[in-house]
Length: 208
Image 1 (tube, helix red, strand yellow):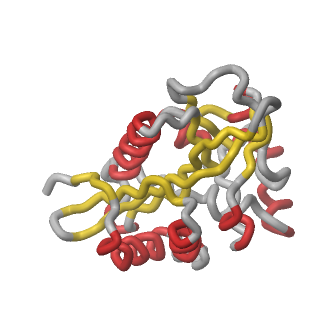
Image 2 (cartoon, rainbow, N blue to C red):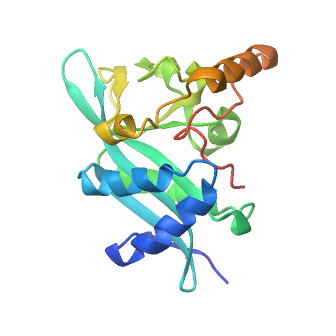
């Protein structure tokens, strides 16, 4: 059956929570992040991938800011991206990302950020944010894992530190801590690159 990507509705919330919980079964706070982003008014675009009546994937765009020299500039953060484990490997994640970037473009956003594995996202429109003059919101995010897709509304003056909205900090969904952070840094040093997802919002499932 053909997968349809459409806007999320309030009636989808239980199905979205089920899919997000399944995709992030080792990170049980992620469904709460989706709820809090909606409840706080920071959510901007939610999309679901449906197979008939079943929700099999979800992506959320929420607002954050770049602390540019001239002003705070509202941008979008893509997080989380979720595909049900039974449906991963079918291209659903790629289609959700494509649709999310198209929605961000229509909304006039200058850029979309995420934390994630650059090996996965570089082929889906994202580059390390530091290459374009942006700073990570936390040093607990390896440089290459903080990524950006620039849209047509971007201009050179939009550069500076990415400032996440409150829900990411309230639920501690930024980067890694403690032993997990040290392990990630060691793996990055051994690999000589940043092909490692880092943190709850960074640990977006590689779905294709």
